[in-house]
Image 1: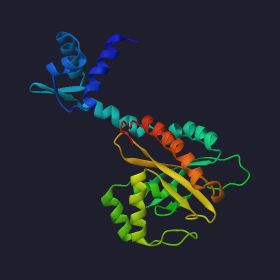
Image 2: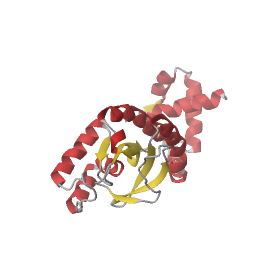
Image 3: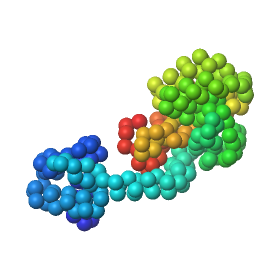
Image 4: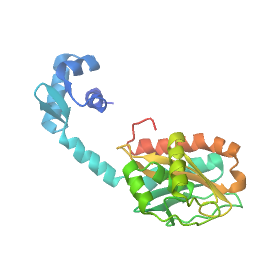
Length: 249
């Protein structure tokens, strides 16, 4: 690969952790000659990728334009589908992808299990955010103020035998979900069905989707869940990385 391009990327990468840097600070971190770093920085300023304020450099507005276009053009279904297919092979259960649409969860992609006994969920299905592992993971990782506004106005309707209909119980469950990083449900949307779900994060660190493994309750014992969760978390992180997420999860 072109060495100049690589060095330029290394310079820009410095600003992932630092909001502002002086020329000597960039030289120290890059361990490159001062004249080389200065020329690269000035070129990036001219192109709009960096801007200079006094003695400090910071990211320029040109990057904001490119970043916004990437986010707008990225189809989460296209990114997620290969990962979902691998997860289905690893778990032999159905894998669902869900996003938030207002006060509902919308199922936008699915990879079906090859097991003869299965839980049927159609792409395009809608569900309330409080019921089921995949919808609830969106609620659990929602901004706290938005989550509380939702909880204040929503009516919790019993959908299946274990749907949570008490708001204080739901609040406690959501805190538990956030703490452990995943949700589990048994007969919340459909009787005798179970699911485990984790959040998918975008480049801003916001939970923009939920990824779940779902099937009949008898195949989701505590041991089964313990086996599924690491694979599910890794799959969600793989998708999140493709969406630009750089956190630890």
